[in-house]
Image 1 (cartoon, rainbow, N blue to C red):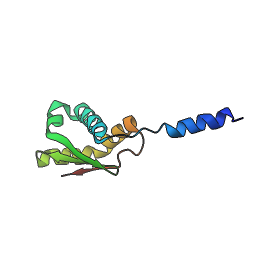
Image 2: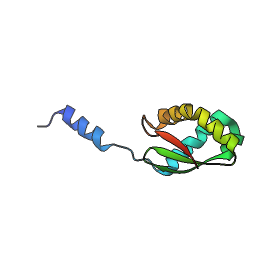
Image 3: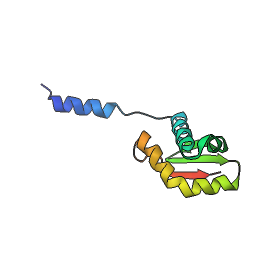
Image 4: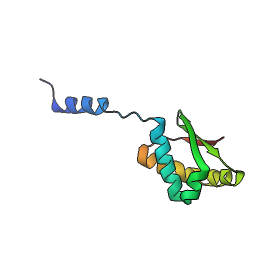
Length: 93
């Protein structure tokens, strides 16, 4: 007979959630709206996600500096919603 502990552990292991690029972009846009408002959300757009790095398209260098100065806060907020280590770095294109 199998123990309840082993069964629960196996169930926990098989229930890993895989996230798509759209999930990262949605959370990124929500955090940007929270930090910079609608203007910031229209100026900063997530382009793609790869291996813990999210790449962002910008409309001006002023927004690049704003994003650069606030990148740690944005990464913390995204990781708070998606799980620790989901985003490791933000790069500007």
